[in-house]
Image 1 (tube, one colour):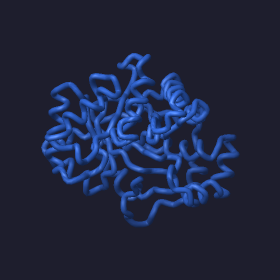
Image 2: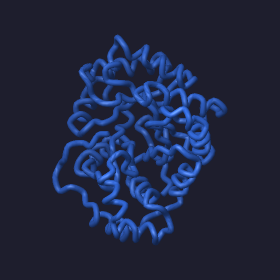
Image 3: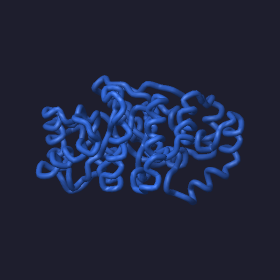
Image 4: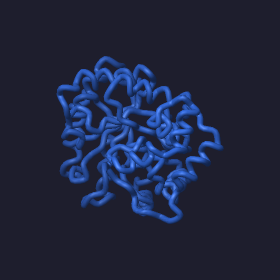
Length: 285
């Protein structure tokens, strides 16, 4: 289901972007991955998420090459800073390196990848200074649970947080207990990484072999991966950022923009993979 998601600053993006975790690490796949990213952009998937951690900068370099033939203003580029680089002694150099690898002058969003030892207020102050310098348009966080978000939003400048990027998929719905409602109340979109499950083979096998999942996928004549993506994309206030390393996979992802799951099928998926009845620790990969 195609939706426009609005950030607190008024900027809107499509609810489907492109993730890049593990891209750029295998040089034999370089051309294939460049083609995949460009194919996604051509299909309207102009939000691209990366991080300095991914391949220690190799993902950012790959994205930089892929976007070099496009108008910068047509793209929405997100990267993430390591927690140990998120203080005043390192963040400015880290951001410069990210911008250099991407071949751009300004990031649309710069995220704290996860909480570390640097005080949150110091990181927020640095993000705000990067905004003043014109190196980032805005900032957000990743892997923040409810209490982390509450602490962040109480800080000076903390109200400028634009997003929280967390793991979320059909079989990992702990964020629905309290976190998603809190973010929605504050007008902060959630970015869902690993929306088609990612690096959890046992869980993936259980979901992919589930009779309800198979039945609904067959009814829409789509793959199970597409069904999982459709489920995430149909949630309010959520942007899905699946990784796709081939043009074929990108096309399959883009096709999900035309898929809408009726309430009856969503109820069936709820029964098969229910929201926990209590708070659980935030899942992180």
